[in-house]
Length: 268
Image: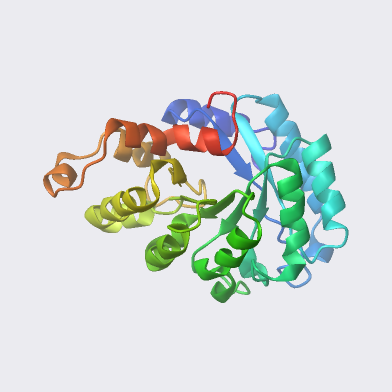
């Protein structure tokens, strides 16, 4: 990594006006053919390195471990990451080859409930092979939400610009499903009114406490991170004139209050 200790990241946060960043590790080792054998850094070493960076910048960085349900002894690895290394959530990447409602994943949910930490899912189409979009459709989160009512589920990307209405249809009746708008920068750049209107509908239908601002940073560079933040701190007049409005309380919830509660941060 070009920033192994997180120093550049925190400097960027200071510049952009971001208080806390959640670092999510994705376990790619069993996704890419030969990936685990070719990798010079094991998933445990990746997690230990991330934990050290987070510890160095305590209060500014928190992290989530990557878990692949097909990995041997995955529950023991969760124990290590949560109890010893301080992981505060679990990141699952279904496009790597498993459905969220496959029973092979359920031991991970049981661990998350045991530790009272959320599980984060990728929830929109993917374009990169060998990933497969069919595994990440929001419909597959419904069984998880029903079978684990105590589990906090975060659908990253909120279904994205293609599946967000499907995501809302599932989340509306499942109060343990939350959404974030990571990656929606591309929509803002292409069609601002479409972006704001979709997020307005998300908040109206599930409540501001279940919709969170997020970046997918640095993976989504459609617009600078500071501009993505400003887009909600200073909503343009043309958006308001089009009839799309957000209350100050909704903006504050979107930009951090809801995430703080979701992650059980002391500032909540």
